[in-house]
Image 1 (cartoon, chains in turn blue, green):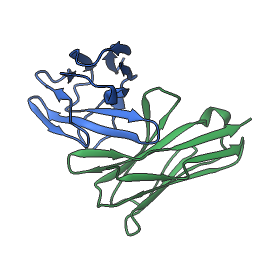
Image 2: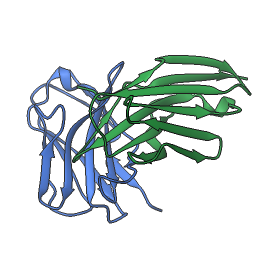
Image 3: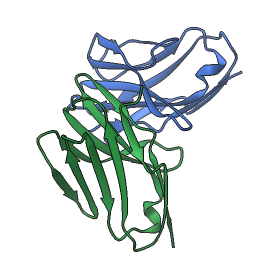
Image 4: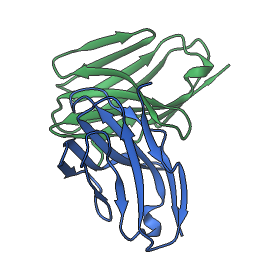
Length: 112
Length: 109
């Protein structure tokens, strides 16, 4: 089944404790992206990747890192999480930026 | 900043009625996409319309694009309770995607 998976689905952590949210797709998509969703703000793009080893900042990259060492994986790294990073995070992938995106189920992160 | 703004923010209709949602944007686009999100879940792609297209249909969905007005609309005909969800437009420009804040549609049975 074609899908985008994210792990974990739910995470409660404390300020400053490094964490990684994994994202994997099995559709051989080139384009992958991370978004955060906050009430009233819709989805805001954090980082995106056009292909392996090619990443770029989106609208709200501060406090986040990404890497794209393999085509299927695009992990989101929070080196030192802060409470303002409490949010619902989505990973998405598409054949290329010109095509529709497939979204993962989301990761709800709470930073206390 | 968000580049797709949906209007209205919330819409409540009776089953069987049509629902129209609008999206405005500020810069030129390559394409514009509409997505649906059921409460707290991942977004599901509905329709993609390219900048050189004016109208697209998919089942009960009709999307129009007016690049001169920098606006798009999503029409859902003969709505059903299962259409209750949030609807987002997303504009593709260059290498990134920008989403609006969404329209929350409630269809009452």
